[in-house]
Length: 182
Image (cartoon, rainbow, N blue to C red):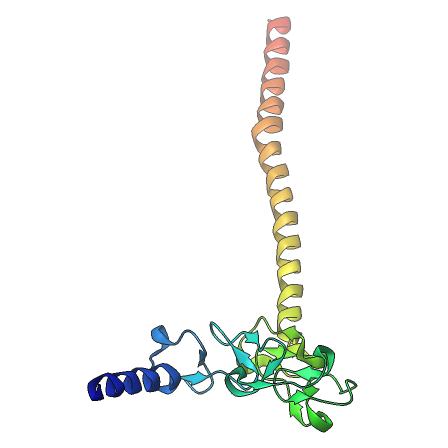
């Protein structure tokens, strides 16, 4: 009996202490923080694979172990019941005192960042300035390649089709003149 309890305690500790896991073993109810470079417990209000799922109503809090005593619209997965659902984007909880936890952002933390944790802002989401500029350069690159390819194709057509015709027509004219003169 004592050995069973000891082995169960060891298993329980290993399962719920994410910091003991390496990146490849950092899975259910844990996530790999690139900022901290370690496996960490799910943020308060989140659960599941890589901690991407908010607590389901009526549960909230660390490990989703607490229960809301209010309607689902006023139950926040991080902090439980709140009176005013009118927090600014990026903030939630009593008196809007908690900011959204990665990967969530925006009004009531309902939006998800699809970028690295370091460039996810709890209010606006991913910083797109870098991506927008990259997109502009990508667009110019595609346009440049298209125009360049079109010009190259026209030059090849000119060289392959029109130049041999001109040479053969000059030879025929020259041969015709030679035959008529001689």
